Length: 247
Image 1 (cartoon, rainbow, N blue to C red):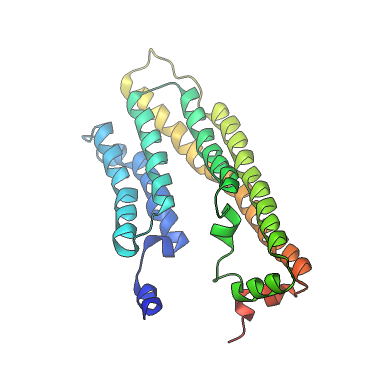
Image 2 (cartoon, one colour):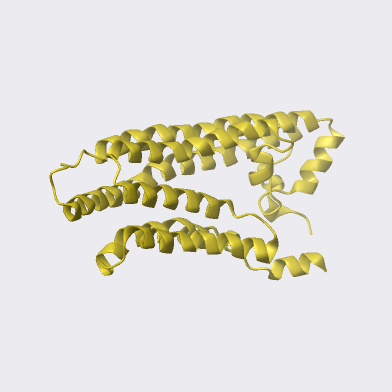
């Protein structure tokens, strides 16, 4: 009964593409485009409008399923920092710090999860939608390999955190390259235009710099996890996957 009800609950976090679109891409798009489309809006109003989308998505998910939407939280932080720095008209260096610090925080979160009851790989990747968890549990207990499985997830968590640290370093270097000093003698409107152009360039290039190491890291981690579980439990990789779970 409960499982049937849970399946009917629709949240933004159920669909990763919608989740990213509402919480990350749309707010950034609004930060870039609203000032040009509605010149009468002041920067603070633009920031509040952009922030409303991840805020709404996060509250919706919590109201519907009583779960936190961490992409919404990331979207709020990312949008708030980007818009806030633009409102304050700070130097480009601080945008570089901001661009580097978010993947750094995520990397630290993944790394520190090693001290939690469930590390990142256990909590985020060892999901019944991907893995045949009952078979893994049954076989690991029968073979006395429970501690080995735990060690595998810890090693995977450590290596996955490195993909975020790589993104942080690359993003910081890219931001330093893009955010050049703006002549203070220029008119305020012209300075704002140049800053918006720099932010726009950083946005699309930054997503590539963050997404590429993360995508490669995730793909490699899933393959490595399957191989390590397969070797430890004497199972074929396809047996470990959810799609081959016996009905």
